[in-house]
Amino acid sequence: MVAAAQHPNIEILTYSEVEAVDGFVGNFQVTIRKKARLLDESKCTGCGLCEEKCPGRATSEFEEGLAKRKSIYKPFPQAVPNLPVLDKNSCRLFTKGKCGVCKKICPTGAIDYEQQDEIITENFGAIVMATGYDLFEWQEVYGEYGYGKYPDVITGLQFERMNNAAGFTGGKIIRPSDGKEPKTVVFIKCVGSRDEAKGKAYCSRTCCMYTAKHAHQVIEKIPDSQAIVFYMDIRTPGKAYEEFAQRSIEEGAVYVRGRVSRVYQHGDKLIVKGEDTLLGKPVEVEADLVVLATAMVPSRDAKAIAKVVGIGTDQDGFFQEAHPKLRPVETHTAGVYIAGACQGPKDIPDTVAQASAAAVKVCSLFSKTEMATDPMVADVNLAICSGCGMCVPVCPYKAIELVPKAERVNGKQIERLVAQVNSGLCQGCGACNAACRAGAINVKGYTDDQILAEVDAICL
Image (cartoon, rainbow, N blue to C red; front, side, top):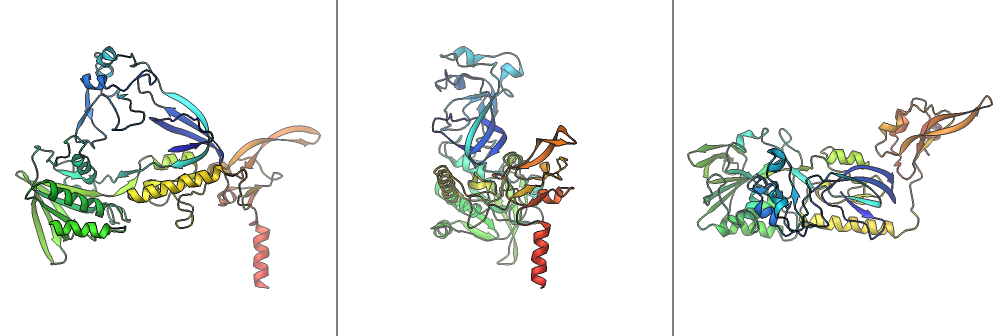
């Protein structure tokens, strides 16, 4: 989550997590856990000596599990700040009680094994949600494809890291099992997408285009290679996208319309069994490498952070926009905006456009001295409110809280709890109205008497 500050001198916090969000538009109070890097950022110069000499090894998350990293490492290239992080789970000092090489060789004495997480509270005027996406965990659902069982069955994201010039292979396409160059590469699209029975009903949008790119790269980088793509439909919604997909086909990529039923090992080859629905006959391919275009799903903590911030999610778990056409980057909570794949599957151009729109919305918000709000918000009748608190947990926008109210009863001064609605947060959804046992909360303009009066007027 990225937050827009109310003043330009706010510190940029990285390697941090948001734990709580209170307040409302223009006055959000955010509690942030700044995780311990186990080094002093003010002393570290990012020279890389500690990473070079570290004997510890762990699976690299950035390389999608295809390569190893050091126990002290930079999370990804061009990280900001470009400083390393010490992983306690793989560090020999923490797992075996002996090592400390990084601290011994650090020229500035920046390594600090005793460093703890730091809790920071800051005020912000607006919040932009950009939590990204994860890949659909289909290993058990689509076990027939052999992912995890056969090392040469990989995802499109793993292929992307392997094919990257700055990646662990230097851009060379290899088989993870033996490091050899594959001659026949099979791509399987819609793994988890457009499958209501086993996966997700929606289309992930990006798979057709990055599969076309991957097929093009196989043909370009590997002489006498063959790229075979099993597909349901080819969807290319974007400027020059259709031309690029056709270019891959013209270069030699073979597109087979049909689903794959099974992938299994036979010797050093992978046998891919499917069908060609255009010809109406089964297809069997001997492949050296199989690449799966897996569905994009919300990040694993999306629902939890949505609850913390006070925004809604749709039936698939993506953040819910206020209106798909008129307010695509706004949420129902004023001052909270969304950008990128957290709102739904999208590619880089759409993400950049949405991020720019969200930034403009924040600038527009900060340029005003006053805000126009919807007057149709919840209102509490304090005379009959019992202070039971049933309305507080049901409010999806955290707009209701219990506050003490002083009053005189039989000549005595007493204090009792009553519900109070924050009009800056309330969106007039009416959930509190339904939950209130005493009938003390109504949405302005929609009281029982007003609705009955409208019915009477219609019937007359």
